[in-house]
Length: 150
Image (cartoon, rainbow, N blue to C red; front, top):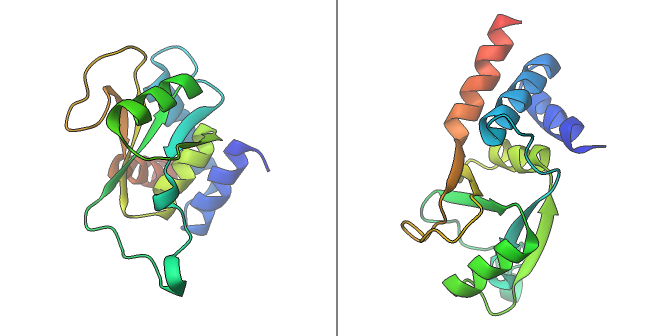
């Protein structure tokens, strides 16, 4: 299953039509691309301490506040940000397509936004790099709008 189909499938599981999911995916690509298609793969930093594994057989504690999923256009940019920010002793990158990132945004309510970091060395604001954001609520709105108009 390719990247777009994954997002369409996830949106359908949440009650949206396939055409609405395709329209929302096109909206997200346009929003992030600014006239230029976004990269086929974006890189997400994951630290070993934030994995799905739990220690001593206990479930991980739920996040206390909404999270932002930060993606980078290159692996070098992701690792540079992780190292400069001290985000983990064992950085690990995962390459994901836009459809996969949007699927995570739809499926996980604790992720409040996707932030695609801008290229360059602009200083972080509130610990996050500068870039373009897609808020979870805006994505769900786009799915709802497209679903109603189709």
